[in-house]
Length: 238
Image 1 (cartoon, rainbow, N blue to C red):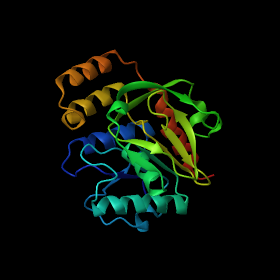
Image 2: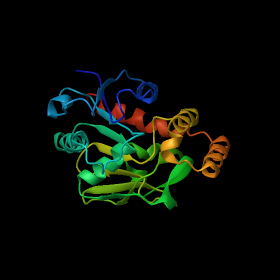
Image 3: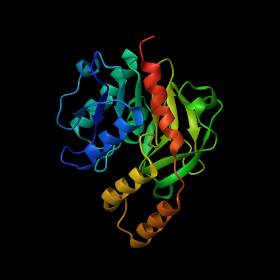
């Protein structure tokens, strides 16, 4: 069997691509292969013989951008669901699978989140194979401009927040999980991402100072790594 596949939706020249890969490898305990969605023609062949699939955020793009490679990426998420390949999609990937399945993704500046934020498990989340080992509330690293405004049919909500309700889902009938938050990141990793992408997030100096302060005062988020370790265990041959 091949190594797990990380589908990167960042620009290939983005230095955070290597950072992202290192974070996922540390969180899963597995070496991963990386493919750039922007420069690769993605099709079902990329999913063959993979124990699981990962996809993450994008500092420069949104899932509603009219780039052909984004449409191919969304189609590949649907292929992973159809083929029942164990998968975890965070941030851009979460918004992508919601949009691809018929949900609504939008941007409300009042609901942008950056920091380590407490989230609650739903009743379904407390029973979920990946999420059930988390406490409720649990701390989650978040950094996003867009939000999933409306979930599609065919998914189950697993975690929710006070500001943004739709924070994590499982696709019904498939081993496909997705979250707005980043289970691969530590607080220190999140600070590195923020410092790299802050100009894309905002140019308002007061907001930047506020986020810097918030991040400095944020708690650690060690629990969320359990989600990816649980994915590895769920994907292991029985």
